[in-house]
Image 1: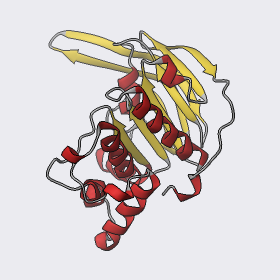
Image 2 (image 1 turned 30 degrees about the vertical axis):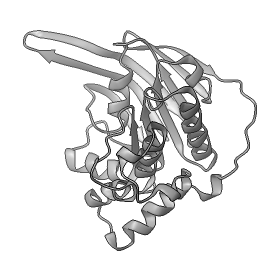
Image 3 (image 1 turned 135 degrees about the vertical axis):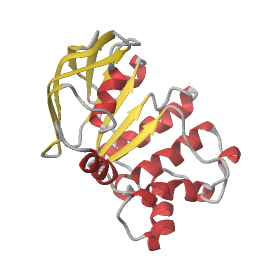
Length: 238
């Protein structure tokens, strides 16, 4: 699903140039759950932004689902984001004056899609994350864990093959965070590919692999030994 080779990225502020990524290489198989771990400033979010086609690389190669986006233009990148990628962030980024179902339909406004079935698709996505009974509630009426479920449903509505999550459990208590990780696991078991950035080792150990990033370089690639979990509910995930 993902091939990254010798990725570099620098940022310039005035006359000062800082190299954030210094030749990052890795692959992610289709249907794999991979965590990127590292200290603050190690380059985790920069990697995720490049994978999500939100940022451009300076040099190297990035292939997503068989397409080379290393030198892709803005229109091509934008179209691929809408079709192939779902995003889940630490901050939920929900519209406070919109219901859960309306928040979930937002990506359809930016996609080349027939909006006629938008509500039906949103309700299926909310059902997939166990929140169909809260579809007409507003964010202020939902707990933090429920708001993150709405954000995951929003990420699913266009049927992306790849889910990118940035500290998706960082604002949640342990129980709510565990429930979000259970949803992520079911998504992977249903065939999605998921890349999650975190600083939390306990979160990372719920994945299949952990990539360790330090000072802009991959310094470790660990397989995670875990007990096999059932795929209960996976078939219903959009």
